[in-house]
Amino acid sequence: DGGITQSPKYLFRKEGQNVTLSCEQNLNHDAMYWYRQDPGQGLRLIYYSQIVNDFQKGDIAEGYSVSREKKESFPLTVTSAQKNPTAFYLCASSPQGADGYTFGSGTRLTVV
Amino acid sequence: QKEVEQDPGPLSVPEGAIVSLNCTYSNSAFQYFMWYRQYSRKGPELLMYTYSSGNKEDGRFTAQVDKSSKYISLFIRDSQPSDSATYLCAMPDSSYKLIFGSGTRLLVRP
Image (cartoon, rainbow over all chains, first blue to last red; front, side, top):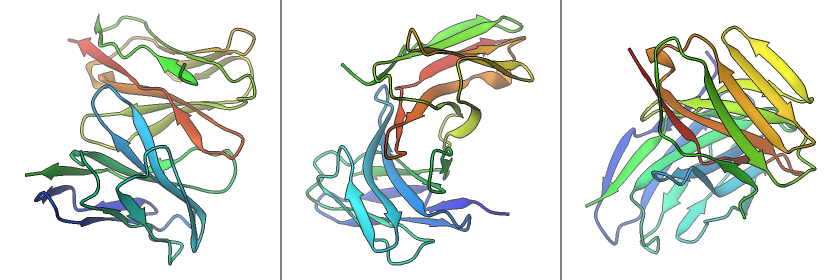
């Protein structure tokens, strides 16, 4: 079955550490996205990529980094520069154009 | 002002009730409109997708678009406890990135 896989489901990080969230899709979608979701704030766009080896900052990119070396993969690194990283992170993909997104099941990151 | 506004709720209704969920938007260039359903601790899933003004029906769900008022609605008939979730409206901007509402949390009481 085609889909989008995020791992791990839960992640704990100590303050000052970088951590990388995985996102893999086998839908042959060109575009991929990372969102952060906090209670009562909906989905906020962190980074997006519409083609391999290219990505753009979203609304809240500070403290995050991404890479897009393969069409299938779009990992997100939460760096120590992110002041409030505890959140639910969602990865999505879409074909080019106005079709809807397919979302992964999310990674819940907690800073301890 | 946010581009897409949505009442966060929570909205609590008894089983069997008709539910109305709404969004307003400010950009008249938006052409496509989507509704996503998100269960707790899960990723959102696409529920309905509509382009034109008017109504689109899919089972117990009806999506309504009024472009002149920049207002979209999702109606759920004969609501079930399994409909309890957060519902997000979304619409693509000119570069096809989706702009999401903040979501309305719905609770259907048995």
